[in-house]
Image 1 (cartoon, rainbow, N blue to C red):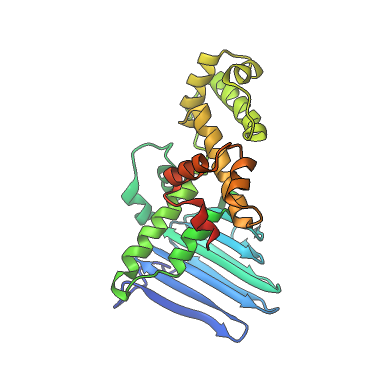
Image 2: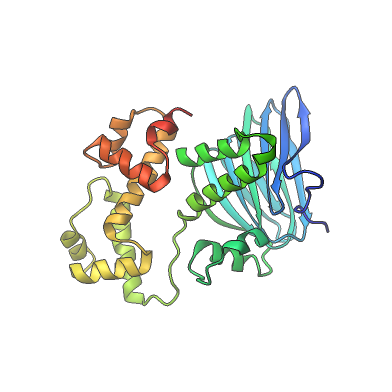
Length: 306
């Protein structure tokens, strides 16, 4: 079986048209060795298949903006369905599967593939870091595993647009696109909950209880004192344990949830910035915009322009 990587020959950025007619196209774009993506746009009721039969250790990040696709593992005889408006994360260390793009009025799908040797550049020697976790997972004999699926957010779409449509000269495309891929990786991997295996059972119970309460009430959360009472502990213990498990403070986690929700609302484009800031729990639009920029490096108003 061949490798899907190392496909660049005389250029550092290569586009290959896998399919093209009046109904749409499927492009494969090799950004550099270790990174490539599929850009799929199809209008019309047709089926297309992409076969993967190779020995690569890699992760895949499919983003389904419109339509859906199915991934069938030919070895494990297992099928995964990735639906519209979702961004997922798959891991695989040896491929023998088929991606089927089924008939739909309109298909708009982006799939990013990242090789293990690219991830290896950024290992931290901490298995609880997302890149280390994913890298070591695909060093195992792993056919195909769905790690995580979430709704698409505005920032992801913003970064993906920069990857697909780099506004740079030909000589800089590979470097700029690789930078944008890293930006997407950082954003996407931050959404994974990494919990240290050495965490004690009671610490996990307290932190998970607090997390579940905050998931339901982050726009108007209880005070630390009330939250601690709901978790059957004291304020000091709650703050210490929560930070140990989730590597952030309770307030930091509330802010994370608020900004993730804001990202989803920005994608929908139904509300303006002021309405979104209030919807996710911020009293002042200016503060919301400042926190959003400090976290993501882009102002929410810029995402609405996309």
